[in-house]
Structures are given as structure tokens and as C-alpha cells.
Length: 332
Image 1 (cartoon, one colour):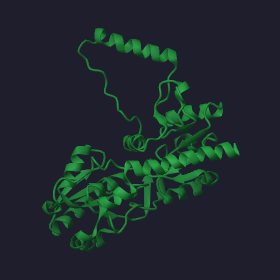
Image 2 (cartoon, one colour):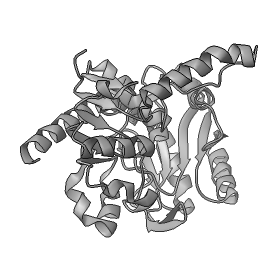
Image 3 (cartoon, helix red, strand yellow):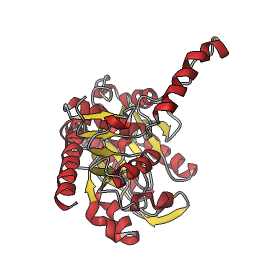
Image 4 (cartoon, one colour):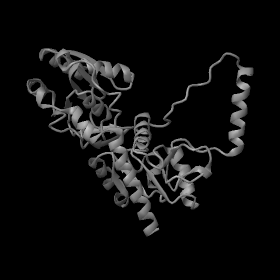
């Protein structure tokens, strides 16, 4: 079998004896636990949204790659490992010369010194970040890594995130609550109601994809409450549903896993085509009313189709990985 150019690795490869043991366990499970279903496994282990976008996007563009191969002999020349356990294993492969290039990010860690400094492994040839403000976190903690950084975004499945309801029948506003106290979210919902829309709260981490899509399909706009975003895939999903966003963008102090920092943006890819931003709740009502008056001027789905589908983003990533391989071969 021809070795692929690229392997996307999010689950460590197990040894041949371990694979044999796992097959035996699966074979005898019906005898040991008759009627008990096998534990459900994700088709995209790791950070689901990013891994799904990368894998489906690479398939869409016909890239020369494989995903979580079963044996070491199937690993490509380049390994992209956006999951830490897989990254550690890939680091060993790079150190031993079994692969020629290793790429990580953007979901392995936010800070370069986080997770025992995994992103500072010398075997890593390139680091992917989603937006330029994240580079400031590297400049502050590990400036030597900045030359390794390249920007690539994850995309969305524009066929799944596709509007069904005509825009004229949308009488609600999604209120996407990720950060801030509940009293803040309540106040935002009161402002939404004053502007003539029924607020539909979506709390980050508590909803299904289908629930979010259904809420967006009935909404004229979506109001986002997040203290920072490195990309904002939930925003892109709203745009793909042709729903413009009105985004809280405080650019202030934020916290991640007990660490405080200055956030660069809550909406790094917001454009005049996709919505408006507001820094404090004092400005929200006027910004929201202006957005509702100017709804025909927004073209969020068109923007996504041109800039942030799975295929568009995977093409950028694939070219970045090939360039990383070329540089690795040239400079060692």
C-alpha cells in the first residue's frame, strides 16, 4: 500500500498484540455480556467540530491522507495531530525519523506552556492557530515558537447548516450564552424582547447540533455572549444558516483554566456581511435595532460559502502542511 502524504492522528496507534487483544475482547463480549450494546465511539475522536471539519474537508478536496490508521506502517510522511495523546506519540515518531514533519494546533492548548508545555516539543515543525490575536499569547510566553505559527481555520458543513425557514418567518433571536453571569444574559434577553424578538437561549455545552440548528432556523439574528473566541465556530454555524450575529466583544480580561489574560477578540472573523459587534450592554439595544433595520444588507451564508466551508478551510490547511513538509526537507 502506498504511503499517504498526510496522516490526521487524534487517537494513538496501538501495537499489533494490543490490536489482537482488542479483537478478542470484542469477539467474546456477546458471550460475557449478552444483549449489552458496545460503547458508542465518536467517528471523529478528539475535538469533534475541528476534527470533523478537517477530515470531511480533506475528503472533499481529494487530499492524499488517512485518518487514525491502525498500524505504524500506514502513517504518512506528515502527521497532523490536534490531540495531545496522539501528539506525544507523533513526537516520538518524528524524533525517531519515522515521519518527516509534525504539525499541531489549534486545539491542543491555548497557551504554549499549558498541558506540560506540549506545544514546545522541539519535534513540532508547525503550529496552527485559528486567528492572529492568539499569536500574542505566544509572543508573551514562548516567542521562539512564533516563526512556526501558521493561521488556518476550521470550517462548517454548509449542507447541514443550511436554512429551511424563509427569512420573513423568523421572529426569534438566538441568545448564545457562553460567558458572563446569568443576570447579564437575562438583561440581554430583555433587550432582545424590547426589540420585538422572542429570545431563544442556547447555553454553550448544553445543546445538541439539531437543537441549535432548529433555533437558528427560526431566528432573524443571533446575539452572542462570549468573553473571547479564537475562531468562533458557533458563529460560523449561524452565518451558514444565513443568520447575522450581534456579538459582545469586550476585548477585556478573560480566563481560561484558571489563567487570566487579555482577550484579543470574541469575533475574529466578524465582517460587515456577517453582523455587528457591541462592547458593553449599554450599546446593545441601538446596535441590535440598527442590525434589524438593515437585515437585507447582511449576506452571512454567502460569506461562509466563500470563506469558511469544510472544503475551503481544508484546502488552506493542506497547502500549509505541504509547505511545512517542503521546509522540513529543505532545512532539516
